[in-house]
Image (cartoon, rainbow, N blue to C red; front, side, top):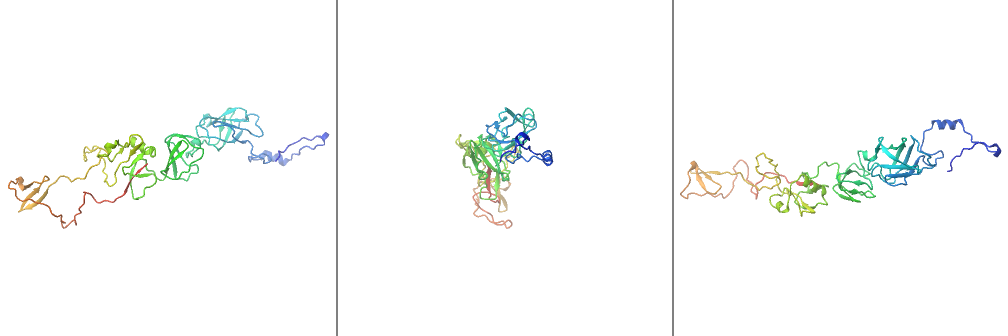
Amino acid sequence: MSKTTFVDADKSQGRVGTIISAAFLNFINNHRHRGLDQDGDGAIDYAIDIGAANAYAISLTPALGNYIAGMPIWFKAANANTGAATLNINALGAKAIKKHGTINLAAGDIRAGAILGVMYDGENLQLITHPLSELSLKCWQPGFVYNIGDVSYPSTWNGIYRLECVVAGTSGGNEPIWTGAGILVTDGGVKWIVDDLRDGTPVGRIILDNTAILRPGYLNVSGIILSRAAYPRLWSFAQAYGRVVTEAQWTGINQGCFSSGDGATTFRLPLIDGEFLRAFDNGRGVDSNRIFGTAQADAFQGHWHEIMNQGRSVHIVPAGGMSQGGGQGRSDGGDRFQAQEIIPDGVNGSPHIAVETRSRNIALMACIKY
């Protein structure tokens, strides 16, 4: 649609000038800007960026003759910023884009494809849309530099997934598909681990679960060898908070520890399947001289069994010898006693015989969060 052109009257040309009504003037005086030019041909003071990352450029039509203080400008950014940025409007000269007065933009304040508003303050262009890096929910961005430990969220967030950077780098041009919790996702030069926000269990914590099917993000604590690259957070936890021993040490009594695997690319989980767990003594003196993460065989507390022989108390000592009550030792090679059968005592039910000494128990799955 062509633009409306106002003309003056010219009698020599027989031309009637544009007639401006009172209604038109009142409309101009009281109108609210709708974002379109008078003929609805296009947005006023809006253009698509034709510059580069951190050096944005737009060309308004009609062209802006000079920067005007208080004038809002809107543009669609072609690239995400990686730091301080400028905007050049109609080649009038680049002006710094600031936030909160005089603060330079931080990496990620501008996202590729985002529509931004700026206003000239007489020196700089103030960002009048909220900087993305300051949003409490930082959504994934293409072509952005992420560091280990950075947290992000899918751009179409479902309220469940949280992304943690485990390998630093620059993200790709297209957002990956976040297929589920516990998945390691490659995104350009970045690697993410996907977490389920409904599960607040920290990495490295061992839990007993009432399912035989491992939940996403968990492994069975079964002493398996793992790749350090595939499970970077768990390996970092093992180094920072766990007890890491060599493979040779692990195969002894240290199976409650992590092992260093091959010393370069792998590591091993603790092995607690089928074991009862005991709180570490930590200097209390109940389980003295115990080292954290070590295994302990089953045992009986030292004791004697007492039986009666012709009215006298006879003690069967652990070494297999026998003495009579009163502390007198036998010297005549007399009676020897051998237990043939374990019988009920008439009060506590039938005895239970097994290959180990144990308490009543229920078997659950031992899992570790990665």
